Image (cartoon, rainbow, N blue to C red):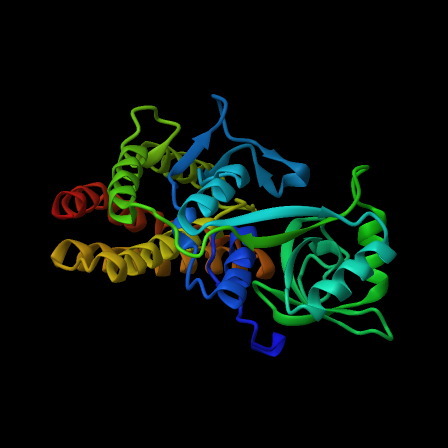
Length: 335
């Protein structure tokens, strides 16, 4: 297979590293999807008592609302167990060492994953503005200019200039710049996919019903209540604010929908529970995505009233999320 056939990175992968690995595995090993390695997700919300205050120039609030998805080590462990794929870190601390590695890997038809600071990726809004850790797939290199051809989750295929890349490598931590290579240890993985799916469903349901208010549906309820009170406290002269990480929830719900669809093909499951849950996940993906899109637009336009109207949809989203535990339980019982 030619490197020109390298697939795009899944647009709504909740973890850019896993999205890159999935694309490499699809190209090199014919693995259709690795989405099942990351969906141990819930809601996490913590803040100190008292009034919510503005910080960092008034743009951010002193509250954090995020997804509790798997960390890198856990994702890579699942990747080995479920698909027999190991991810090996290769240190290439200098440009010349990177060039040599890149040339050899691409000559052998082995695209690889590279960590990337979006500050140096032209085309992204973070370019020369915000430092943000990220990952891309390297699929080509211009021998004359040294420019790289990469595949990025949002931009698709794009070009990284030599100067931008050189500055990024020079600013790498003391251990030096490193790339990630994928290797498949087993052609056929002996893995109880149905048994694992049942356990995953049970764990996901338990996460949503977590007894502590900082987690699960309780966290979503607390976040929504605090946000409503804050917006009301702004009165007739509201100012724009930013809640980071809202994009992650649309990505998580779409990823879980993909997990169910893939699992159905493996174990031949079907029935009302799967269909209703799949439809709910698709709806939640759309609603979370719309919320993120509308709030981002309000920030760009500096329109606080539009932002407040967008966050009003959290009530409907919360009601939909509250349907999830029962549907998860029904599906688990049918398997």
